[in-house]
Image (cartoon, rainbow, N blue to C red; front, side):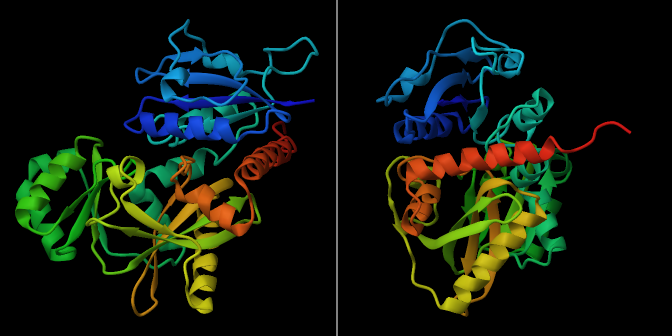
Length: 356
């Protein structure tokens, strides 16, 4: 029988459009001889709208933006049975990026509903979403990183001069200012002066109540794909070579103004160190399913971890599926593997005794 898969996408997030493009690409890649694709679209206001069974590829993302009757998240529960007595969905595939989807909120709901779902659990999702918490955990795990400081909006508003002064004292220029809880390079700015730093703070605080400021380093941007549960595996390495100052949202998703070199040539020892550190990062956050691990490699071959993305994009220009394609895992096979990993993790959790 086909696996009844619920595709969950959209979301109340600045990365809403990214999620739609990811869903469109995943739908095109899925083997319909193996999967029934049942879509649920989450609007920018947070409404859940169930769409009809998807029978073929979707040409435009607007076809995925349903406007019918709102459904409750309880639509996913095992109580919703089909004619053969099985639960309505065998597994949920959340393709949600950013807050209210990639940050552990939806994952917590799916845990309460006791349904298998693809990707990281509550802890890994929430810690991986918050760049400050993630970097603190990486520091505890002994992973080398660039210098960073962080601020809450209230702290900054109460004494802006001290905030700017701390950045200049501890980090210096150039530096990158980012919302702590967002991805896809939304709200990120590079600052080379006090004037640019002020503008960067204001831009980042538009998207979050917490921001992080990181030291700018001259280094190559190298990424690896990681899949697995307790025994993660890594893909070949890829390099991002932006044709502008840095790899921003427009370069990622709109103009394609970036070169992705896959696989990238690296000394064997450097690649092995990247793999080792990617696995340490994966395990330190208790990840499962998939992550994309992002690194800086300096001219002296020093490896610094930048971050991990617990729900990397699956758009046609996204790094994660391309990395695995060049490793020998084609797109449809990658999706099947992730679904299998979700079911494996679910079965293991069912062995936990909840009574004493």
